[in-house]
Image (cartoon, rainbow, N blue to C red):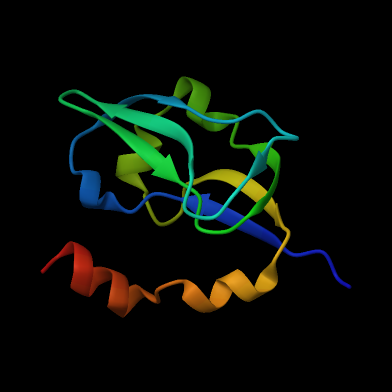
Length: 105
């Protein structure tokens, strides 16, 4: 079976400049729908939820010194790379139009 890697990123719906984040170390197992870290803006802390289950294989090193990249380039800035353990979980993900309908309604 081929290995599937997925990038996990954050959309710009958080709004405010991101000032800090807590991300898992490589090797950590994460499960779809469960919190795997947090992100902090100037006014709030939000949990990050895993879209799919698997093993974290890489954390974006650029975010350590430049967390603001999450807001300035939300669709281009990945947070973690995950070796997906159950590719069937992709069937429950939203496409861009569905996501925009929920977050911008």
